[in-house]
Figure (cartoon, rainbow, N blue to C red):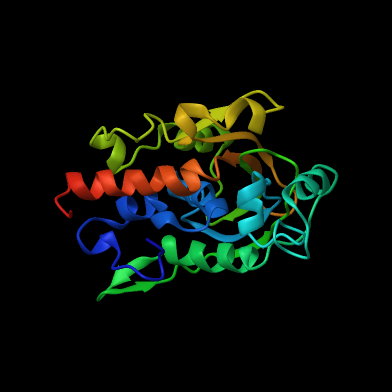
Amino acid sequence: MPIDDLTRLDATFDGRYSMLMGFDTRCGLVGWVLLGLAGVGCGQVTESIGGEGALADGAAGAGGTPGAPGAQGQNTARFRRDLLEDVIPFIDGEEEKIQSETQKILGSLTQGRVDPHPVVVSATTTRVPVHNGHTESISVKLDQVPPHEAIVAAFNGFRGRPQELDLPSAPPQPVVYLEERNRPQPALDVNRDGGMTVTVGRLRPCPVLDYKFIALGHNTIRGAAGVAILNAELMHREGLL
């Protein structure tokens, strides 16, 4: 259910619940917006997002990567080799979608239409040789600057409607903060709770904005198929199907 095409669930439920679901928007965006709902994103004035983790071969090709299978006569084997030896600093349409869809998803419903949130987002996306997972390096400017401990507590304490209803696909803790300074890592953390949990780490002061941190989400589960199933479970439980 792309956000551009649907009558948002806010029409029946509160905005916090509907936005949590992500509406199967861009896979690189769902984890980021979930963090905003956890307490860091909704009140900020300016955000800068950089560095999105790479996808597996097929998903990378679907994202418009130059040299993907079927493009310019390259086969899958060569594409895999080239991606393992390279970082591709462009994903067609991804940066624009992250910037505009964040405003829509964090926005509010007024008389049947979405009023975008005024948050400003600057995004840079790249493809890197990671099998699964989007890794995001995030810097945020906040209206109010809470202490470090309060932000970590907001991450770890966030729960939404899927957790309240104990839905089958809902992770018990949608956001997990790790204290280790070398986490999160795709190889170690991307499959947390079946790939439905966003893992965060390295929260620290930012000398340009207010805070910066690293977030990791599974692109094909939390960012696509898994959240689609969770959407359906939620709508069914609420009597919308």
